[in-house]
Length: 324
Image 1: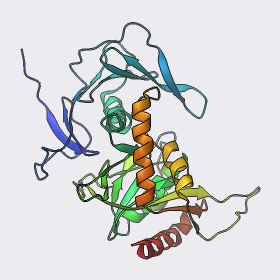
Image 2: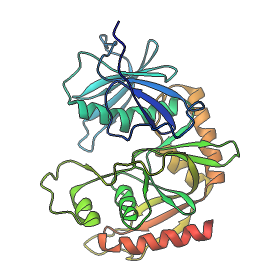
Image 3: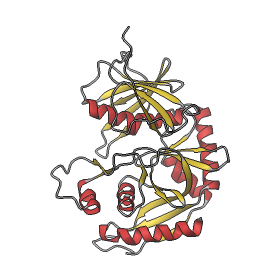
Image 4: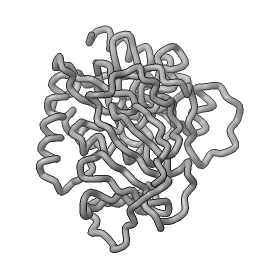
């Protein structure tokens, strides 16, 4: 039997052995991987095919109210079905992920991106760590994370920070665990920014972009932060709008968040593989409860104005200095 050629990557605190090249820097051996969970990701020579229709326990829809992801528990693990693209099978212990045969056609690049952006965050949750739909940057104080609803400007803000010397630590998924010292630690994800064309043009001063229907990855491709770092603060981004073209307040406004408010925000921001497994839900609730006790959270009101990004950056850095 032919041995698969596998490439090795380090992302979300996982050591990923993949049979397909991923759009990530390959693991260079500089980090001790013995204590990291290991995941085999098979995207080419897959061995599972979902034949019978599973009993779906969760479904996520696009803004147009079309289902784009459904999840089900099946024998030996879980199936994640991405409408019009492919199925992924995730083993119940998280050590094996395969793309399924016989599903709708999708490009190899699209399947790789789904694996990185959507499936591996679910594996992080399955393996007992918190995985948040969040974007984060590296600061001299530690990691600063941004959460919020879709369209709140998380990726744009992080990309803006990267242009002035504060690298993107992750975009879309922030994996969190507790280190041996008891500190809350963040594990790096994709360190490029996924932006709409108007954000890319405004932040990176690139020429006009023809494709305005899809987000694009932009920024450095070299991993700048290969290992975990302390998580120092989380900012919940809110847009300040009122009816008409005028905004309620043109200056960034910060509010402290109570532990209850922080719990609600982070539970809403979590990647959650199995919504029917009570033990997993209890563990997640307990982990996030400890998280909001250890990491300060702030609600940050912003305006939809690229010209205000420098002011917003300054407000966040000033607050980080006070927190740390």
